[in-house]
Image 1 (cartoon, rainbow, N blue to C red):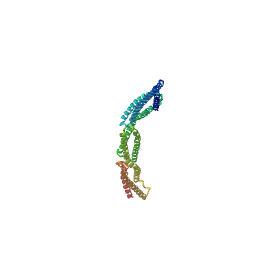
Image 2: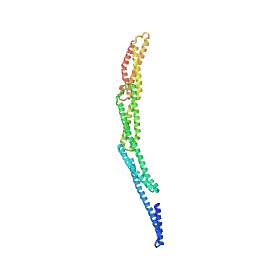
Image 3: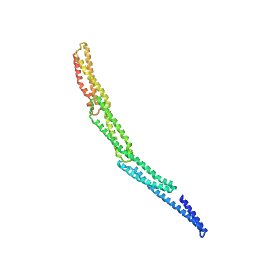
Image 4: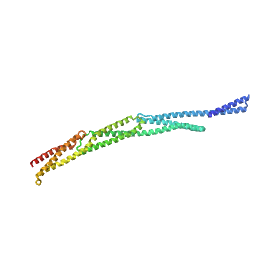
Amino acid sequence: ELRQDLSSQKDKLKCIMDGVQDLYAEIPAGISRRLQEAQRSLQREEEKLVEKSNLLRRLDSQVAELGSGLEIVKVLLEQRSPTVNEAQNAIKLVWDELDAWHSRLMLLDSEVQDLAEEHPDQAHLLMDQLNRPLQLYQNAAHMTEQRTAFLSKVPACLQEFEDIMHGAACWLDEAQSWLSDPCSFPTARGLQNHANSLQLVLDDSERIRQTLQAFRPVLDEISAVCDISTHEERVNQKDQQVQKMQRKILQPLEQILPAVGVVETLEAELKTMEQNVPKIRAILSSVDDTHITLMEHLQNRQVIVANVQSMQRTLEEIERCKGELHLPQGAEESLLVFSRARLLLQPLDELQQLTHQQAALL
């Protein structure tokens, strides 16, 4: 607009000078002096305008250079490093770049302040020119501060990751030891205790899997800064290993749990029979039988024979149950209820023979 006004004034002055030359063969000194003053005035304004234009162009160039440099810094911030160490080194370089551009920005700001004092009418325009690189710097500095703060937490996060991996590995070893130990359960209580232990191990596995899954978002955040694909793969592998071990634990657990109740019942029946054997033997050995009749003697022996035969059938059922429990390999042999049942066969046979002998003598 100023350039147009100046051009318009020059055109007007030229028209005036042309008109004066047409009027006078020799221009009067007073008029000539005034025309020359007008020319010099317009020339001075033109020089000022050119100077302002040059200043603004130079400022534009410096602002553009600053903007380009800060855009490069922003690109550096958005880049993904191969490792955490390289990401930390990269952020140091970014800070160095920012410091350098900040120094240049301060110099430019000082220069703009000086120019604004020399050209108050241009102060607003000059400050507007400076605002863009200033905003870019502030944004880049904010991003760099956030990235620096985040990177400072990454080593602790990765240490936590290693602790989680170690915990999962320890659980896998412990779970395998439970599965590898010989299956020796003398009683139903031993079976129940083993089932409880397996259940605790299984419960721990869920906690471990939840911990692994909960750490995935942390790895996602870190992956935006550097490549941690190996860590992500380790999480996947460990989670799969835990799932596989869970299935291995469930198999014996599902075998043992229903067997506990069966074995408890067998143990209770066997205990009753073991208690009855000496009672029957005592009855058969008793010599104080004068107060009962011969018929009562015979009936008592028949009852005893029936009881002994019932117990023998129960022992046969106990032996059949052994193959129907479907316990882990070797577990049936360790249960004392079956060996105790076999030991009871001979005393029952002896009682049966003794009872028949006494009945035959009556």
